[in-house]
Length: 297
Image (cartoon, rainbow, N blue to C red; front, side):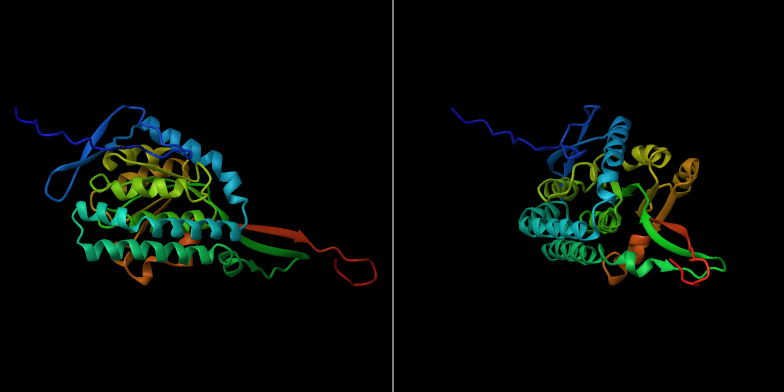
């Protein structure tokens, strides 16, 4: 009697919303192939309802996250880097399975860790750099201070499935924003594994939400969502950038398309990328004087 060939049990990766790992509301999934075309996993194919749930979770988390000190946000970003360091082998295997060479996978992971450390250092410094006391011609003090924008939609690039997510997420949450990340359709494994890192790295639920699915299907709903304040992607040929801008105009979203060719260079990280996702708040404070003394207080 011959033994039948064993069927492999493929892992079905879930989405990450509000610090939890639910299955997609639609019940849909699709197969992820390795470089040889063999199925290696299933991932959720997110729906419009999942987008709404992720935005709601991000909005609910925004107040608490934006009011944390920059120092504390820096500690959490550093913790993410530590946890990512401990998962290097798993992430490397997943990247190699999806067509990366060992050298390219190692570079991708190391750059991602270093980028997290870079932004962890900026969390309690960028406000000092970009704030100002403005000269005015009236009896006022005038201050301008960057403040977090709100909920941001982030679209991961195909050429850097891990580094792209980190390069979008880190400046976003370093500045006190919360986000919804849409992973690349064809290379989502690094994104869902990164969600497991976030879940164990002291990141409050809802600060970062990660969906898998078809970008061309989901970007319309994200860019048109009235509670998303900004969207960021890299120069990705598959996306209809003009249509996204038109959708974003409905609530005057800030729309940013960062340069893909700088992703693997020093140009892929900058405190100016943090300020892209900040609003400048200007405060006027009257100067009162003690009658007859000339002293202001």
